[in-house]
Length: 262
Image (tube, rainbow, N blue to C red; front, side, top):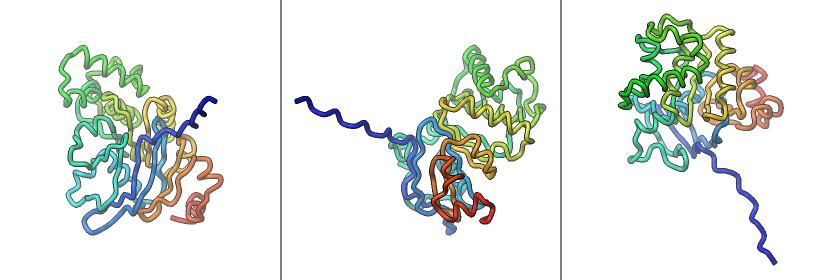
């Protein structure tokens, strides 16, 4: 009799947050956070201001290391099973694989081209042909190429706000990261520019794993595969996005999404 074929196991999540506690000095801001994020998903982190969602986001590429008082109290964040805070982790390499786009678009006061290839230059890429190919590839991916291809040597700060934010996305993806962190990427944009960013995320889904902090719950519904709700530094609930908004399991989640908890 032939041996039975074992049932397939679910793929390991790309990012694993395990009992993660984080503080700024004596002020603890995250408490025992357990959260798995799957490869190529769009995960939205929602919750009121000060609930810890941006701190968690910034812990995934260790940009919070730049804050003098910031520290991991206990717990782990892993990518592919590797603890990001282990002594042997190369933080520069980590940030190449985990790109970040901030709330306020922040192009450098340089040309559009130099913004697009900035990360590559820092990484030591010097060949002009390679830089030009990378600039076009990343600007096309950010749905910006057709708007700027004849203006590549103009200063980037002359672009509109929405274009500047898409340039910042192009700058992040030029390094071909696996993960893109976005901290309220549309907060400073008008509705038309916001729609362009959301459309871009839809176009890029499947190529990158997105983790997005947003205060806009309608935006979370539109773009996220899964949503995690945070309150006072704790992960209250995480699920498929439509389940979070249509069938929340926790009373605090329901109170927040209905506007009764701020």
